[in-house]
Amino acid sequence: MHSSELVKGTLKTIILKLLKEKGKMYGYEITQCVKTLSRESIQLTEGALYPSLHALELEGILTTESVIVNGRARKYYQLTPTGKSTAVQKIEALKSFMETLNEILLTEKSVLKNI
Image: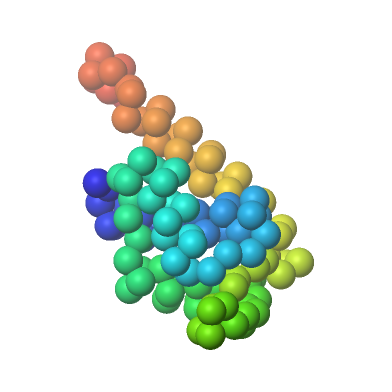
């Protein structure tokens, strides 16, 4: 399982990516999707997920819609128009960061001696 510290730093971008691709999702659905896509190496807790969802909502990136399903209210999250462009920017920024991080991590010892 991946460190919660690493997940915390990327969680908003993960949420934005999923919502960009799926349109709208509810909290439990997001946790299960991440669990499946990560082959269970990322397991989101409610304590991590919901503060991120609420922060994105306060930033105007997400909107919510409550739907009654089997007699219970289910809150769906979806991107606002601003959220759609933000998602693209955040995803690209994270991809670029991961490429840079990979370059650093794969740098050979002999190269580091010459710096």
